[in-house]
Image (cartoon, rainbow, N blue to C red; front, top):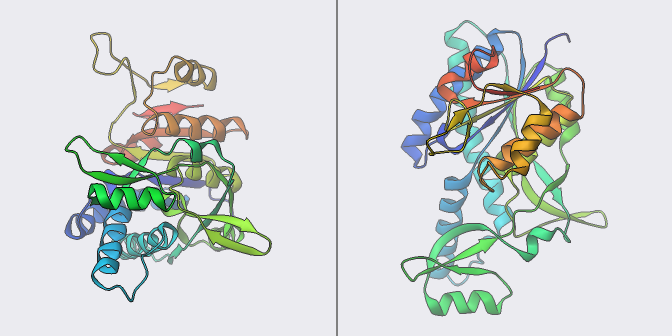
Length: 310
């Protein structure tokens, strides 16, 4: 097939937070995806799952508290649930938008496992706050089980998880086969279901993989042409919220690395987007990363706006 491959990474603002918000947000996301399909792209979609996986984790564990005969849901299971739930809404919205334009293309969600390194440094410094509010007694019980807990500003507590780097996408060949067949694929949601290899088994890990890094790895492994990261800003800023704030248009990989070294971008927010974008562009010819918001997705793709790394 001759069409170029574009991997679209949807941030949480493209998905909403509550169930009704997600229904509305995915319809807007579907319009941006349909624009890319109309332009002749093979499209693969990854997405955030922050609010959704937190909601699921909280609900499942509250259920476990109320029903002692049921076990608490591990993080990997909650991640899988979020992929199915978000994928369902995205599939439905994209299908409807394409049909309204006279386009028929199958849309498939692939539950995606991503292998992590059990010795990743992130496990020594967990940073992702997740789940329901805990009392002091519950927090102490979690720590006794070997889990990390952090105290919030209001004196309550929550679990805190590591954000290890993705090493390998388990279902990569399934995703590739669907893309080659001309299907629109939703994959690696929330950074993927975190798993560790133990012999022939894949065992779920208590972690949250940085979604932007997984999106970059997915784009790289599919030999995509474009990594389109849709976030909360039309263009990325230097010196954010300062008098000398500067918006970035097209920049080189060298420039991007320089800004990263200058600590211009917040860890866990814009920094992983640049890390993913730079790694993707560096490891192939003719590639580009575009960072913009969903309202400017089409213009960003055509390089009329957005921050573009080449």
